[in-house]
Amino acid sequence: MRFLARRLGFYLAAFFVAVTLNFFIPRWMPGDPTTRILLALRGKLRPDQVEAIRKTYGFEGSLWDQYWNYLWKLAHFDFGISTVNFPEPTSDLLFYAAGWTLLLVGIATAISFVIGITMGIYSAWHRGGFFDTVFTPINVMMNAFTPAVVALLLWYGFSLEWAIFPLGRAHDINLTPGFNWETVASVSWHAVLPVASIVLVNFGSWHLGMRNTMINLLNEDFVVLAKAKGLSDRRVRYRYVARNAILPQITSLALSIGYVLGGAFITEVVFNYPGLGKFTLNAIQARDYTFIQAQLILLTGSVLVANLASDVLNVIFDPRLRSGGRS
Image (cartoon, rainbow, N blue to C red; front, side):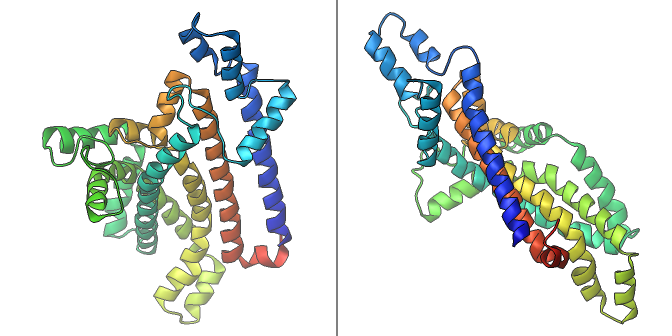
């Protein structure tokens, strides 16, 4: 428990530092988020209207007043008003995009992990066999592909040329999303190519990582002893070797899950998917500071939570951490 308490304290401190930097960095830069609006409406606003706009975006009063006001709003999940989609609240845009990203990248990450770990276990246990000889080099090659190349190839072949899948979007343009089978079918069909483009690039790394880690463990004393005691191959493979080999993969998975809320920029742009990657890219191009700040906070929080979950899972799977309370 002391180990987890220390980790929790560390992550809370890291989040506070990230939030503080997220506040000060835009204010150290020339101008502020209201500059775009004021330039667009130059000569059309009275001084009191200018002050009202600056107050809306948290640029009223001293720097410390702005900082405490920023923390208060952040505690209430108030990220301000979008400058590009004015007067749309940034939180509405952020959570809308986050939902689609969690659906797309979350499912793709889960599929990649399950396929890759399963293939890695089989390759390591039957190292040098047909499966290992054929699929390991293929996955090395697939792992070298960039998401942009895979996404564009899939979109060009299956959407543009053969017209098997939709050209883009998260669902049919004439569909009003709701909790019904029509929505599920449309969303699932539109997600096939984006999910496939992410899975094809990612599952090879899980395969190679699990395979290499398992091979390093196969000659360890505890594995030799388990075999000498006459335990079944299945028990040795999963309970002794795979269970220990999966620990570093869990840490990597936690980081991957944390970065899920970073969005899949290339994939979402290619398939015109309304996720955080596409929204963030649009916000950067249009200098929508409030959305960029909110996305950085969301990404930081998700990465820290995922790392804390990784620490908890490592404590569960590794008895040494439970007994000693030390990493």
